[in-house]
Image: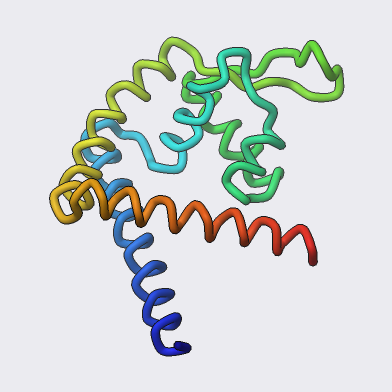
Length: 149
């Protein structure tokens, strides 16, 4: 069983790196947008009123300081803006700007194309659903385990 788990780990991690690098390269080449920024823009797009930097950090399991620096760069590019949080004066909310929505729309075309080529063309729908469900279960278990530490 250990060898199977090691093989799964190796394939999972290496494929994630390959997939990230390929999508990042395509986004940069076509849109001048790095995947890190695109992922944050995607998150912001589902929160109309904006989201706190802390929430972005939690979603991507990265530090608040690192997230704040990335958001600063995205904001400097004009893709997002901070505004006062009406529920907490100590924090601000980050929301997409019209330029950010345009960048996201352009990036989404590239992102979807890359996913279709690299996953959709290789796996059938049932397999995609099964793998997605399995990974969601592993992520949820990992988050529970992290809380218990």
